[in-house]
Image (tube, rainbow, N blue to C red; front, side):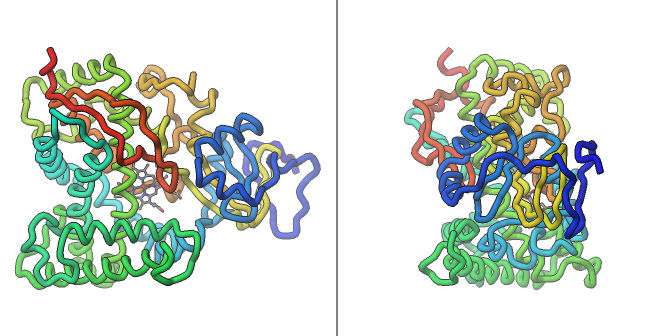
Length: 470
Ligand code: HEM
């Protein structure tokens, strides 16, 4: 057996590895989990400098290999149901529950295919006018005489876009809460925050004393809420508009095929899980984009020129279509460069179900694997001058950002289902901001590092109406 063949070699149980293979460098340390959670950027940077893009850690217990080279990432992404399984901490898996895409590998493909229409193609075009409307309404209220807090401002928009699109209920209409077990938007938001925090509790102890226990309670209240929303929707005589929201897409699909994928429990749970997967992630990327672009007025100028050409004098931003957004490659490149330089999360947390060998390196059965954008995005073979913020690298002429090298949305069978929606929302937000405002950064922010990297709530920027200073 040649351990340096270009393929992943999968060993059967009991099979001895060929001579010449070596384990990744470094030994796991008990304190690695704390060091990683405290600052994943610093953890990845320091170990990459010392050991290269692949090294052993003790993150989340046992041995977990961090991988950053494109070949090892490809191996990590493509092992599902062959030599890897999901390897998330047990609190996270319990919070997901049995209706997530992660809990049931046997149903993963079927469920993901059934969910996909809500996050791709024509459905996104249906969502876009609503996305524009919410951003426009909020932007009219943003202060231009005093600084604004960046993250809470962006967060409010993201919640007002995503909660109705995913949960299928207008949270600003107080009447819409009549007869529901949760009675205000603020209460839904609080429950959702507690639900989210439950995924990252360190103790799997179901009591109000732990983040996990509080998360479980919030989850059951949110499920009750969704159940009531679904029942009310069914009791109206109006036909379901399948393109109105994620919820209505699932209800329409269920009505067409009552024996199909969508049980009531799957529908209720999926509404919550997609809000979990999307809201803070999108909020983080939009805020980071505003922050990054705040350093580069000349890039902002180029983006405005690109936008002006595509909009051709139509100042009604609510008309900006998916097609027009596609004609703004520089805008897309700036978002990708934001995702490259400030990736919100790690990806692909997997456990090896078999021992494998790749490029002479041994990855043992039972070990964890984490594909880390913080490693992959900082490798000079993947990105020229990786420390520079340089969106042009993503334009066709340079063509950086290849598969397995640019991985903010993961990859393989568990690749992010909402990547297109996330890009669409961020683009729409950017288009409105560029059109209406100039912005100045007020100092440098502190970042929250875990579970999602994002700017602290207290960081402020100053907006002024675009062109007012001229
Ligand atoms: C900028 C925003 C986002 C980022 C950076 C992001 C990142 C990721 C990553 C890295 C994964 C892979 C996890 C793994 O391999 O274990 C993932 C999976 C997933 N994401 Fe996203 N995500 C974003 C937005 C969204 C949105 C808007 C939605 C839906 C509304 C969404 C839904 C999902 C789902 C359902 C999965 C699991 C897919 C599967 O298991 O097959 N994400 N996301």
